[in-house]
Image 1 (cartoon, rainbow, N blue to C red):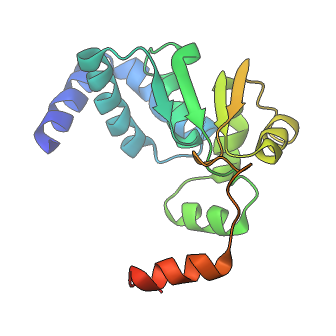
Image 2: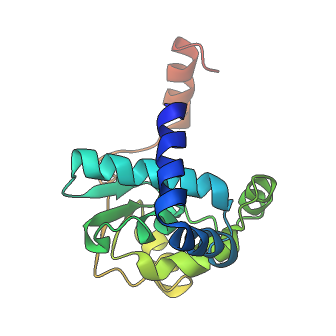
Length: 168
């Protein structure tokens, strides 16, 4: 709830103002994300990590990396699932710029935090390792849960299904 966020944020500012300021600067300067918004996300993340005490966390995208850096959670127990690598996608860069997120800075300064990665394709893994220098000690490929050896894409069938579901 909003009241919980305000209470936790207030506690953070009262009991550790210097470290909160350092986190604010790190979010803004090094990761290019809206610092205050990310501090609020961090407060909630720490609350739920403490409450739930998960063995692992599966993060869907790199946006989670700055938060986990300051959460106190073990990096090795975070699995990053990449549905795309948007660091060089002009549309992603423009859309995120409107949200005050510097995508290039976020990717460039987050890759060293990634220890376990899951990709949708081998090409994505190669791109992540070669261009972004993601050096995850453990990485794997899960192709959207679809066995691509047996699945054959058919545009006609796709169109028929979409028509039946009134999605066309």
